[in-house]
Image (cartoon, rainbow over all chains, first blue to last red; front, side):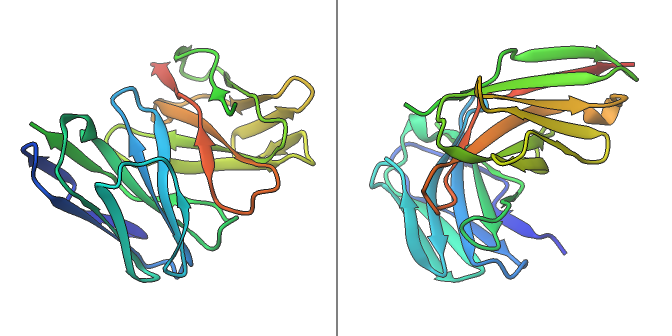
Length: 112
Length: 114
């Protein structure tokens, strides 16, 4: 009965690899987000989708590509991973673009 | 520019005391503010929010105060408990934008001493 779930919880990979993180919400929300939390706990939005349409695209390298196959899913694909991509990535969802955001448990990505 | 920040990185309080966590923001056009709690190894959890047409809002053991004159937001936790130990973030959403872009502050670590 988890509201916002992410897989995997931990991801360790080498530089140059391509990896994906998956997010699913069962709240019936229209809007989903990806955030990046760095080693100093600073949280910054990366992307937002509303009804499968991209509405927020912050200054993120184009190695990062979100994909929303349906309203309940927002995946994040990262190409050519770099050391600086190491962080915790959080997915979130909200009823609409102005609603409260509910966060998933996070995916800790470590690039070696 | 946009900046949401916290005055103190770490706050240590005795169990049972009241805690006050502060936040400063610089975007006077922001109209919605939220406090999140993040426990170790978990995602941020919504605590309480306040819109810019209010200056105070109360929840269960928590109160948020908004002072738009000095662009200051605070979270008060009454009778702090060990389970309140976490990192607390303020976030703002701003102005005329209808998108859900939240801007987060750096976070304050609350340590509750038994």
